[in-house]
Image (cartoon, rainbow, N blue to C red; front, side, top):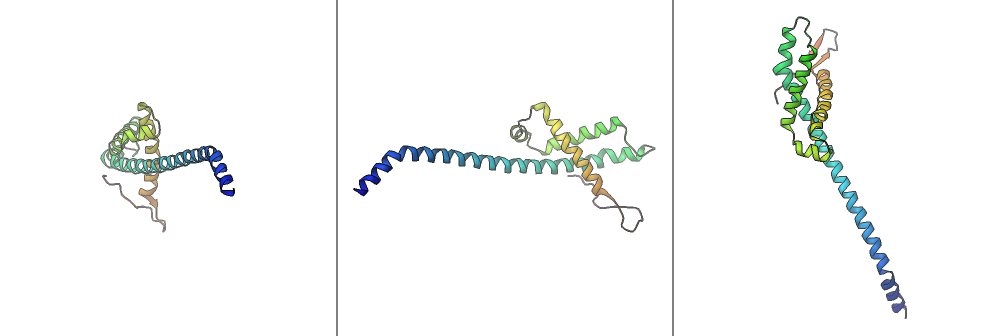
Length: 150
């Protein structure tokens, strides 16, 4: 008798149990997909940072350094800065999987340069702060990490 009552409960509640399992399974699949997308996005952003830094260092060596040395005040004009940024964006694009970037962040094709340009701006600040630091004994700046070609 107990076995029949248990069987009736399982049979009658089986549809509800199956529905609950389906919902729980769908929820778990969504969580796994979100986790994978987050990890993929973190990896892409890390690669973007590396590419931006490498591009900034290369453009500094190939373009900016010579201009600074040849300009009387040692500074770049606005046009030269824009050209340096455009060169860095082009170099960074060559180091990245643009399709992955566009798809993952739902970027319009014309938004890629802006997206990479933001990473270039960040990299410029980072590279500036790492290339020349004041010395601890007050004797002037010292070079920590000279720019290198990637």
